[in-house]
Length: 522
Ligand code: MSP
Image (cartoon, rainbow, N blue to C red; front, side, top):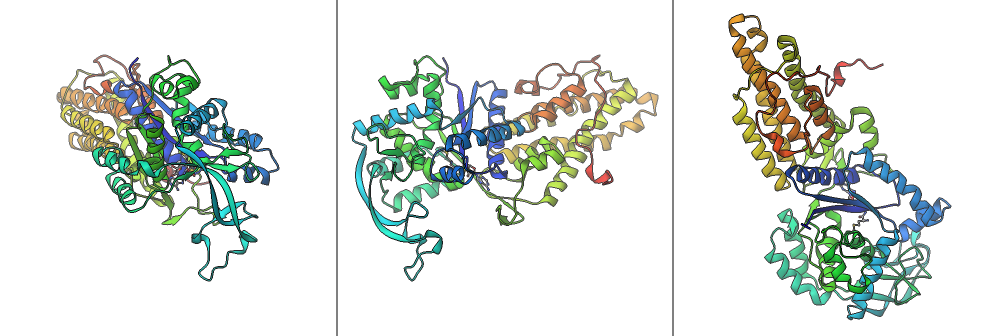
């Protein structure tokens, strides 16, 4: 069975409500997944939740719920959120699922058996109130601690460690030899800089049950549970293994959770994550896989962080963007469009309500919406909606746009891809102004020329629907519906010029993006 294009997002902590940052990550991953499906790849898109650990245990306690009941409640909210974003994920992983837990335990057993995991004492400053070890970073200059930590004492605790340091040189060489492993390039340099300047500490992967019960039990030591990152990162691998992916099952040998006859998924093609968790994905994760004898993911794609009005988003100050509220007011595709159009994958983004409104009005309503609306309206008005003979005046522009957008999508330059699409929209709008079909319609001798112009316009709208499909799939389908085209706008090959056939009758125009600034507020 040929390998599927396997793409993932980070899995989100279930200790709060989803926000713009989570939405952004899922949407850019969705755009890439949809684009690859359009290119003809068989895609597997995974997203989900990171449900273990102290923060979740505490959040559950604060609500007076058992951790599992609390996670079940939040999981419903998060699943609904993913759906509301129009995300086309193929699976949804929760780290509390038995299918995941079995694989975490199998990996721990394997690494333990080969001597990559060992037990050692750790001595440090401990806050009993917050149930956590503190480092010097949390300490004031005069040696005292913030009162929120309560009494801070020296404590010695035994824990399990994963031996990472011996893989450090190998990883440096791997990343140097594999320029595409971390994207964008400056993030790759950051990882290399870190690896070359610091000696990696071994990773503490356990917590004693007495301190934390909400975790996956360490199979070879009943007094401990696995601590979050080892558990969380493994989700990318546990889902393929549980579905019977041959490579993942081979790595786990006799402990594989399924017959090795499932879809071929591993290694992942892309892990999409935020810049704050790059080190876990570009250092810890490859070392865990290397130690386990598994091939590495092909690419770690690190996006930037969203701010609002130039400041960090924070619930306490009310400086947040609620994606669901924006979607309720402006529609899903307006939201998807803005977050992808505003920044390339890499740098940080800044949400402003004004910027959103401006893009909505000038690019969606006046740009795309106006083009589609007037093209279909004129065809209805002047030709009863019947498509005239094919003509190819705008074909070279369309072909250029298709090529450019495909290149950008393959290079993960989603913002540039949208710019390329809007170049074509602007060209087509200028074409209307230049050819002035409303004047041609008044002169019977210009009837042939009017046919040509109308064909070029509606066919460009159809090609645009296909180009836009990965980004704003609902709008793409609405354009196809208004054109009464029965084929699927999600297939990239339908970008070929000439899809609308002479004699075909289009439907009535319906505004795609109503101008909000013209509607009086009640
Ligand atoms: N649970 C870990 C990830 C484990 S992956 C094996 C985690 N969860 S999180 O809920 O805090 O973050 C999930 C993702 O959302 C991360 O990739 C993070 O970078 C992203 N974002 C969280 N806030 C963000 C912004 N303000 N802007 C953009 N993305 C941000 O980390």
